[in-house]
Length: 157
View (cartoon, rainbow, N blue to C red):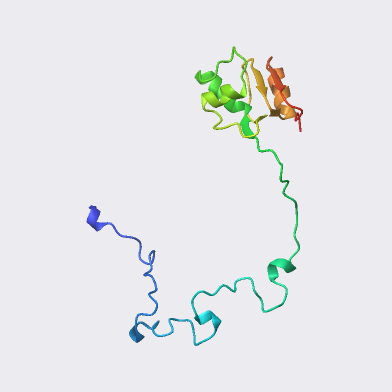
């Protein structure tokens, strides 16, 4: 097979519909817009307007609430921390802080803090200091002989 023999599967690509290109095209004159009226003109924005009745998006019930001051945590799993320790990217003898996690490349940015979750297993004795951690993660680290300290009031969930 050569480069000039490459082609798409039949029916995979369709030609663009060119509107307003004469009567022979089948889309000439009014260009498929019908005759007269607001929708046949250009610059029409009647998307949400329903002729005076309550629009659909206002009739439907609204649900939920988005907290405006919510915190976004960067999430790290224990298994990944263990993997980075084994690879030598994180020094297990020194305390593992949020800055150390960012420097190792495990976390891109801290956001409002780093939260450790218990996915994966940890075998090294680690001293981790982060903004948040799940209860299971704290138990898993302490079971391996290490310590996981949460620096703010936002502790186990």
